[in-house]
Structures are given as C-alpha cells and as structure tokens.
Image (cartoon, rainbow, N blue to C red; front, side, top):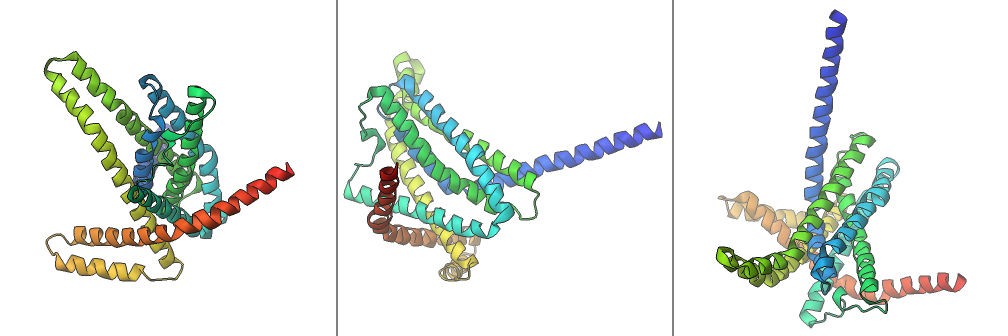
Length: 322
C-alpha cells in the first residue's frame, strides 16, 4: 500500500511539473509572440492585397493556401534553423535580428516612398499572368508565401531571442512551435475575417430589417479600415525594425543612439509624472521609428542599385551554367 501511495505521489509530482512546463511554455510563447508584434501587424496588413480582384468564393481558399504555406515556412524550415542557431551559433542571433530589422525598415520606408510618389506599380493585384485566373491565383499564393517567409523568419528570430538562454532545447522547440502556430492562426484568421467583412455587410444589407443599416455601415467602413490597417502596419514595421537595429547596435558595443534615446525617454517620464511609463514608451517608440525611417530611406537606393543587380547577376550566372 505504501508503495502504491509513493507511486501516486510521484505521478502527482510529475503532473505538477508537466503542468508548470505547459504554463511556462504558454507564458513564454505569449511574451515571445508579443515581441514580434510589428512583423505580425505588417503580415496582417499585407496579406489581404493578395485576394484583391478574385471572386468572393476564392478569397478564403486563397487565404488558407497562404496560411498552410506560412505554417510550413515556420515549422518545417525556420524552426529547425532557429534551434540549430541557438545550439551552435547563438552569437549569430543578434546580427540576424539586425538584418531582419533593417529589412523591415527598408520595406516600411519603401511603402512611404511609394505612397508619397503615388506609385502603385508594385501592388500584387496589378500583376497579370498568361495562365488566366488559375495561374494568377497560384502566382499570388507563391508571392504571398515568399513574403511570408521573410516576415516569418523575423518573427521566429525575435521569438528565439526572447527565450531565456538557459531553457532546454525541447522547451525552446515547444515555445517556437506554439508561437508559430498561434501567430499563423491569429494572423490568417484575422485576414479571413477582413476579406469577408464586406461580403457579410452586403449580406446583411440585402436581408433588410434591423441589421440592414449595420451591413451598410460595415461596407462603408471597410475601405477606410483597410487604409488604417496599412498605415498601422507600416508604422509598426518601421518602429520594430528601428528598435531591433538600435538595440542590436547596443548589444554589439555601439551604444549610440540607444543611450541617447534612453536618456530622452527618461526625460519624458520625468516631465509627465502622472504617466511616466507611457511617456517613456511613446518617446522610445517615436525615436526608434525616426531611426527606422532614416535607415530605410538610406537602404532604398542600396537595395535597388546594389543588392538587386547583384542578385540578378548571380541568378544569371547560375542560369547560364545550368
């Protein structure tokens, strides 16, 4: 009998440890996912463009295809790479984060540049393929998954950097898997709701009755909401990208502009004793964003006149050899 009680006590202890581990994974996954907010918001803002111009019946299937590609990107490709980096080259995480942050700044600055220049030539819904609607759908999905890969890489790297170094490899794998699945479901579930909102509003309007006004309101609000979402996504991308690069420079020994921004945030907190935390956060985010815009604008000509031609030359070289 005493042996059975001891066994039950051991089982209860193991269950408590397992429950604590689950709570720890969930908690750390939530923190890691929150760190990747900028890339997540941008992902949600960008994806609806890829279903523009298709029939209502194809919108959700296209979003589901992109979501499946996103899960594959995160779990099959990026998660093992992240674990290998964590185990064998943790010193690479900060430089990779900075490269991803610089890319976010570049993307955000390029969106601002095109908006100011009223240039919409890069919009995916203006792309035409000889394969007709089916070919266009597949091209859109491939393009969206490629864009998602870059944002997913940034999300997974940010999440990895937020996990304490002392955690076991299996714990890191679980946390990253939870972040990957949770963010993908949240982002593409939100995208599906967005792309179907106008259809839902139209349905309510056509039904008539007390909900008709609500339906008209939804249809009327959605174009403006999409514009606001795009602006918020761009701002978040630039802010997070700038923050990542500024913090990365600090970690690597270049303490400016990190210390100057920190000093300005402290001054703002002292100037607003009623809400010092909010004042410090807004000040930090503002100057991180300014840094992100400047860095992104610098990177635009570098990307177009140096990086893109170099990539084209490499592709041409390998294509000639093939």
